[in-house]
Length: 202
Image 1 (cartoon, rainbow, N blue to C red):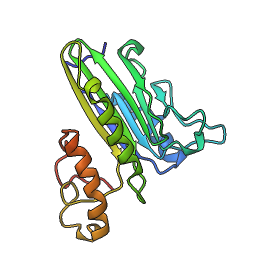
Image 2: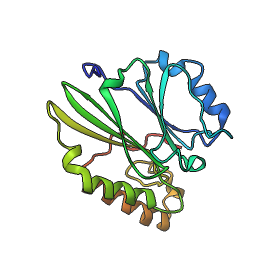
Image 3: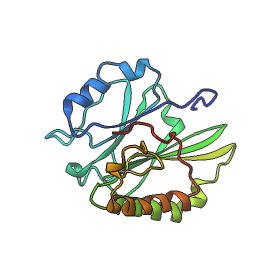
Image 4: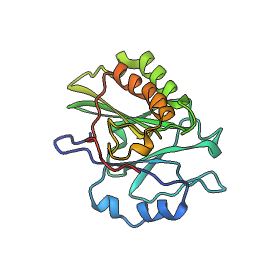
């Protein structure tokens, strides 16, 4: 079981496909020693053997389609290896840009979507929104306790709702227009922004 009497600590970062960045982040035990339970990486480093960097402290979760399209993987999740395999499961999602895990306990369940959305389109946001719409009854149901849902990752859009309002050079008409689709998807899912506005994210 996952102990939810303490906070669930998540580290989320885009490593920009850099092996050195991912290696320094994971292989030195820093995050494990900090008590991080879950690492959500976007644009991970994938080597010529179609594998990525990890260590024995972590259980690695590739997208469901990684086996057939390994060179397209842009979101991986790592969960602390001391968290029992019986307490979580991976949910299938037919995209290289999303991994979903669901953790359960007597407290309920939490479903975490680790997402990479390309900066040129909203294709992944559309897939995410469609999946949520089709499966929301299951996602919101818990046999015991309460069901929780988190969407996190690199959505590649800037908006005054979350970026520093002084960074007005980011808020071009095209960027604001593209971001509206993400905001609508968040609103339709009944989710709320967890990070305070102005939190540095780039």
